[in-house]
Amino acid sequence: MSLSPSSPAPGTCLRFAVVGNPENRRTTMFADAVRAAGHAAPRVVAWRDVLRGQYAFTRGELVRIDSPGENVEVDRLLRGTDDPQRVEGTALWHRRFTAAVREVAATARRAGAAASADPEDVAVMFDKRRCHARLAAAGVPVPPALTGSFSGWDELREQLRAARIARAFVKPAHGSSASGVVALETAGPGRVKATTSVERTPDGRLYNSLRVRQYTSETEVAALVDALIPDGIHVERWLPKASQGGRAADLRVVVVAGRATHAVVRTSRHPMTNLHLGGTRGDLDAARAAIRDAGGSFADVLHTAQRAAACFPGTLCVGVDILPATGWRRFSVGEVNAFGDLLPRLTGLPGSGAEGLDTYAAQVAAAPAAVWRAEREEHHHDITA
Image (cartoon, rainbow, N blue to C red; front, side):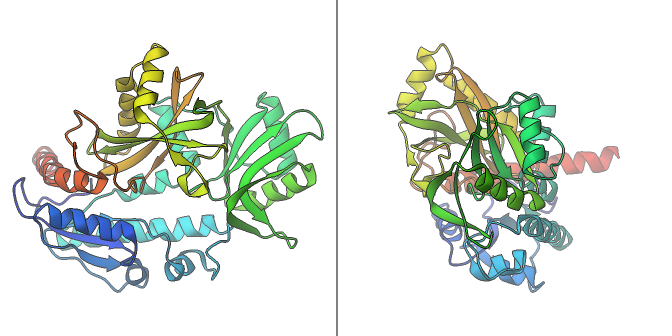
């Protein structure tokens, strides 16, 4: 974490600031958790003010950096468009957002405050290519992926053929919430199917939709991919997911201060399991049983999530997407999410230290110890430098 040596020790009443959208439930749910823990209500610093340079922090504040999403004005400032449903523009969004996070962290540091996330961690998590490479370099299991850039559909298809990948996920490098994600299947010349929530208009613009659809014309798929490529894409092998109740299933594991505290099964009739696209929460006990019956251990799943989170040591909380395959026998990490903690009403795993706490309360509880550890480490570094 980007934490200041002026931060308070455990047991102290903490003062929080939240960089977020004031009307968003992420901000209000975190504020509820802070008050429930006996601290003063956090001071909310609106993203729109941050992006206009109209903000400040005070000494000793713990600054939570939250998602800038779901706000039309903020989206316009980050992407330069008045239409938040547009898929294009993620490269510009990434440049402006990561620059803002760096400035927030620097402003907090100069004020003697502490930020909940390291700017470079956030920048990597919001670049699926760099995130995949960092995980792979650390030995975390990830799906095989293509590397390099692509000039267009023809080159992508040729590289998939050369790598003998017939089923792949094509993801905008800087996307989130399945925006622009395409589950691609190829089976010989002229045979292709793309499953996606993207709607392409007759004039070639791409829009997010809540309805998952399929494109089976290679001309349509080529146009879709060609429109995604300018912002950058990440392409990885589509691993056959496990199933639960006849639906594709994966897991979101929340890791707080290095420890897996919450987990939820996500199931869907579609390749994308995101809850806003019709996915539903599955049965975690049934998933545990399936893993055990397959000869595995749920503890190993949590350990994999913790290994992924350890690749981002400066960030208090991340959400790790675990992809179970081959009948709950093998697991890899699909993504690591900087803002993967929005799981309302979900309480902590047994033995996690977060029993009875939601994801926000768990972070509030972990904050004093995390601050104290960072203070000790920074003090030791200053002495030995």
